[in-house]
Image (cartoon, rainbow, N blue to C red; front, side, top):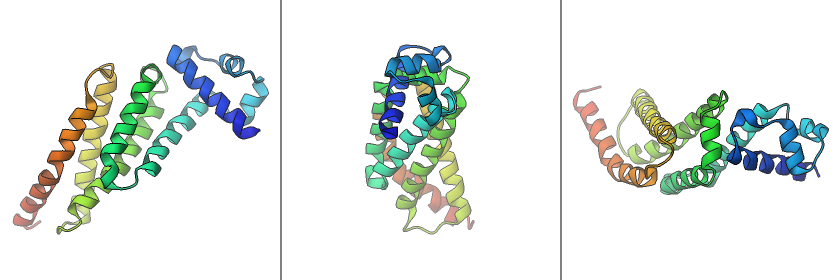
Length: 187
């Protein structure tokens, strides 16, 4: 029963978040929408920000679990973009709220995990230091994070998937070229 109730709370919250701003959603709204009492809500979640944090973390973890290899990096990106677009209003409501940090923290972690796997698969046959890897992953994570934040900030109107596909086509050669330059410099 607890699993069903928790799922109902999350579904109601996402539904409401697609309809209105985060700061206009109360525990009362959620429990009325899903037909439970307040105590049931508080049994599962401390408050609305805790509920939001859990949902965002679960979505990020789902992408990481479902798409664990570089072969599925584009599929992972498509899944993230598809989820964001199907819940566009909810994403924009979170992004424009005081709880934006929850979304940004989980997005940053997701970018780091996915980009780390991607970089490792591309440069696995090359000579590089852990410091080089850290720098490459750090910069690419920030690039993906920044592009995604800009996309959300712009109302999610551009075709981010098309740009991502093109990036994935160019990236192997760019990374290999950068590492060759590092080798030539003797660093």
